[in-house]
Length: 214
Image 1 (cartoon, rainbow, N blue to C red):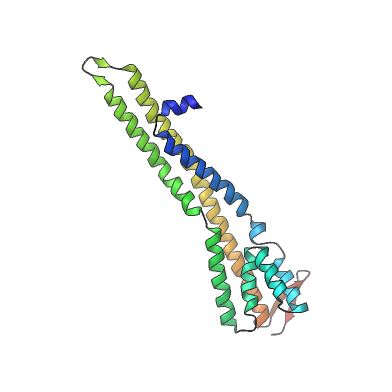
Image 2: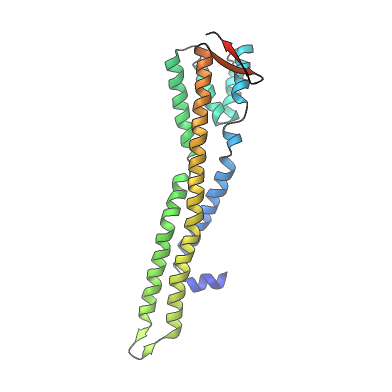
């Protein structure tokens, strides 16, 4: 591995730094963006059941806020449960925007790395080509300088693509995961508003719909 780094020359070092950052971001997002952690199954049903049994309590709000991103959105709605439907939905939308921003954290950086890594590899290629042309002299070609220039050009190009391809794949995957989770949170929050402010289906009893009157 060290021999490859030596053959690639100094332009490989920014690419190595980019690869370390990309791997760290991918691992962090894989841990953070788990759907069960963001939108826990059955949380809405538990919230509706607790609301029907004991109403909105500070303990319930605190527990929801610490539970998950979906819990933060539902807690924002329950804090305004005595307000109008419009006010409650507005509070949920504001909380949802903040949660979505947190879920998208580091994705811009990962996408940037996926975009610039091939350009960084191209820069290394240009450096290698300069060395290749520099190997030409009136007395002939210096084989050692020529070989080093070719190594710099090829290794940097290849390493840039090695970084960019998986980074772009994970960036698209994480973006899709965030979009799916945000949509599901919006749907569950809308159900909460409907149950509280109208004649809607309440799914709190074992997943079986039961009508409630506002």
